[in-house]
Amino acid sequence: MDLTYTEEEQDFRARLRAWLAKVLPELPAKPSPDDWPGRRAYDLGWQRRLYEAGYAGLHWPVDAGGRGATPTQHLIFLEETERAGAPYVGANFVGLLHAGPTIAAEGTAEQRARWLPPVLRGDEVWCQGFSEPDAGSDLASLRTRAVRDGDDYVISGSKIWTSHAEVADWCELLVRTDPGAPKHRGISWLAMPMDAPGVSVRPLRTLAGSAEFAQVFLDEVRVPVANRVGAENDGWRVTMVTLSFERGTAFVGEVVACRRTLGELARTAKANGRWDDPVLRRRLGRLYGEFGALWRLTQWNVSEAERSAGGVPGTGGSVFKLAYSHARQELYDTAAEVLGARSLSLEEEWTLDRLSSLSYTIAAGTSQIQRNIVAERILGLPKGR
Image (tube, rainbow, N blue to C red; front, side):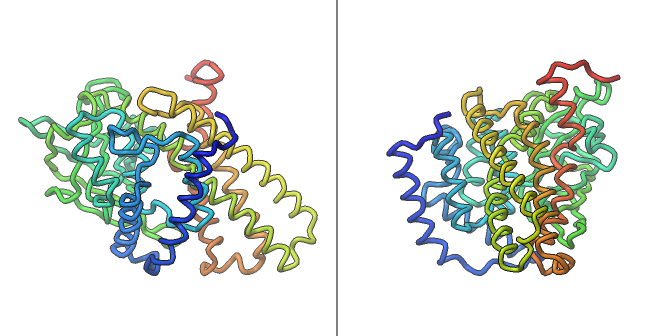
């Protein structure tokens, strides 16, 4: 991509910056981290403001309800919203960054018309029902069953680490529709309403004390066959589309946030005297270079996605996910050095970020999985036995 900005792009940036300066002071106070109904209302309210201003689904295709913005405009949007301290996608994470793009790429016209506008308007929240107690990194071993009964599937099983299940309206759900097929086949991708009879949600508390994950139990839940995205038993391929979005472009905003945090770390270190430590200064300098490289990789991945059929990111997402997960952990380890004894307090935002960073080498595919993808699909190395 061309890394210089055209006059039109500069104008886009200026108009966005002016809009953010006007609207951000009007936002209500951010709710408590434990107040999930409040967080849902806050996050959906922000999404509604983006929609009304024409900034929702900026990079989505026009026929999927987006604005069809260029990769550069998309990245400008992320830079400016992070610079201004605008709210993150929050509870809209799965709908905007996983399920929505997957339906835009793989759904029928009717499915796109039903599910995409409510996501963009901030009317509905989605959660992700992929992992199971015995199928995490080896996702294809999932055992939640869906048995065809007329125009419905009848689903039984359970999902774990289901993000935002307690406030979700819909779940992107992987089920096994042919138990006799090889494990990577016989899987289907469904959209399940979370208020369907037989769905129960048990929140899970994380190391940091938050409860954004849950275990979801499914007891003979009926889901219309019309809610299946892609062909029956072709869900593994559709899942790879979802995971490509998750690893390829869903973390883009976080890279911008990490670069901002890095600057705040340097300023804090200068203020509390930790800047005098040459080892710490070298570490901050190296992180500055790493996140600069990650931003360039982000630009490359976004550009590649825009050129591909359906806007689906490629295997470069695994390179990014692998490098970003470890860089983020080192960033917040460094934050602990800067904070000193204060890093033991859960009242410190960077302490909570440090605890949550531990999950990054596991979530969205472990680092071992990403290394396998890089080895087999990019380097062409043989598969292990």
